[in-house]
Length: 201
Image (cartoon, rainbow, N blue to C red; front, side, top):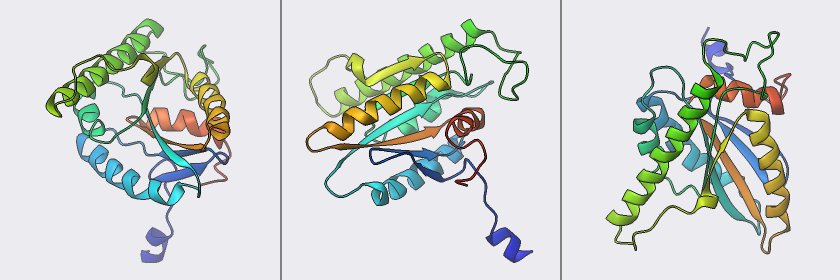
């Protein structure tokens, strides 16, 4: 039994998925205050080993939460890490819900999902602006090109791959380190796009 526990693998928890020379995903389905705290500590350690020589790290947050979770508490924790970019998406894999997909949630309307993402982005921007004031920096809005909302996970993945190509061409090149967290549904949707057979688990 002990050997079985030792060899146990839980896809989507503390999982690193390299997607090329300039893009690595860090997957953790943390969705409580306690688990997000552990997730962030893991990410800080794990990302250090994932910076190729000669590149600059570009930490990115990909976040969503569902149900009656309190995103402001989780985002407040995550804002303690210097993410350069924050991405907010629904848990839809594609922009339309397939009746054949176990990722589809038919209990939530599209407008509700999108409104939650916009609310999460506003919370994030407020947290960063408050941090700037506390740090004595000049007060100003969070740059518009640092926060984005997407209608579905496949759109996020297209954006990340496109930006990763641009990051690779920069001098010196950047390495995008994307922490995917806040929801097991979100992590599952991302895994369905990058590792549907769980071959990388």
